[in-house]
Image (cartoon, rainbow, N blue to C red; front, side, top):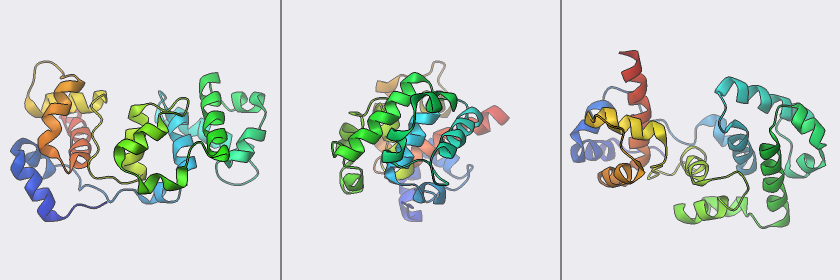
Length: 210
């Protein structure tokens, strides 16, 4: 998913405040990026579960440890994951909840309750509804999967605190807006709400550096 220049110009025209920052932040990348393209849908979701509520460095360490538990170089396949002892998974640093979530993901993938191969052919809402059936996968995680793995152009995650704070900075608000306010404000960014998300996240980086 790579927006055309004309589409970005149209977005900036609909929202000049956002358009100003579109010129200042790094160019919107072509999602999914190379690292995500190499991952299967199963691996991408397993990574999202592993990384939840952890710093990037800590999560990466745990991820590498779990990868080393499998027979191959990457993350264990679903069947391989289910064969691993709970003690080994916990020893790699996974919390009990994350271990159970990864096992649920693997089991659903193997028994067909979760059709990972067909996700790319389904609309955004259907993907979210499918993924949140997995233990440990909430709406936010499903939305991040839509954006970073499937490369969908019109994703908005109103529950994301970073996006809420980004909107506060963008609009010069005294108080951080809530999910409903962000979702309403995001209407004019469609059909490129993913670009707006990216810009709000990068805007925070500029704001913290100033």
